[in-house]
Length: 163
Ligand SMILES: [Zn+2]
Image (cartoon, rainbow, N blue to C red; front, side, top):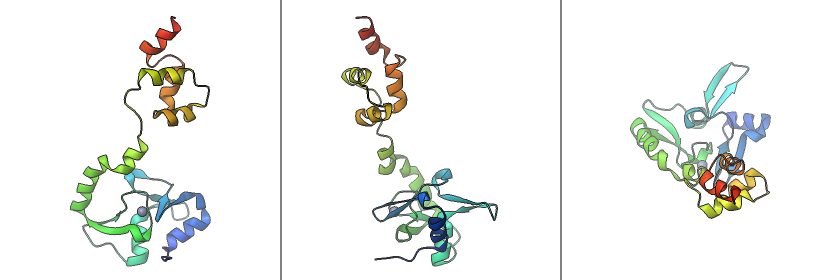
């Protein structure tokens, strides 16, 4: 089923297609994202637009007082019309609290707190790029770099250096 698109989204998609990524039924904004809200700076009008609100206005009309436009799929970058609905200020505050533990955040931060010694050792001897290693070992590039130059996990890396 094809849902009519808001004029602002049509306009931005034509002008700058890489600002959007489709993920299933979600249309994920890749542009400016202050406070977890998609925002678009219009250089001609010299002002910012909150895209959730603007999309809602163009499709459904104005947002009633005390309400916010919210993607019910849970991804704050989503601008899919089918996923946007209105919530009250109170619901938004509850959501903001919950969002600290939402799955989409967990998906982003897969980083392990402490790497096991055998993983640190395998990173030391891994010749692939830092990003490849970080992805596979469940850590970040910075940690991989620090292990390789001996500034992180010294208790493990030094042991091998001193052998
Ligand atoms: Zn969505």
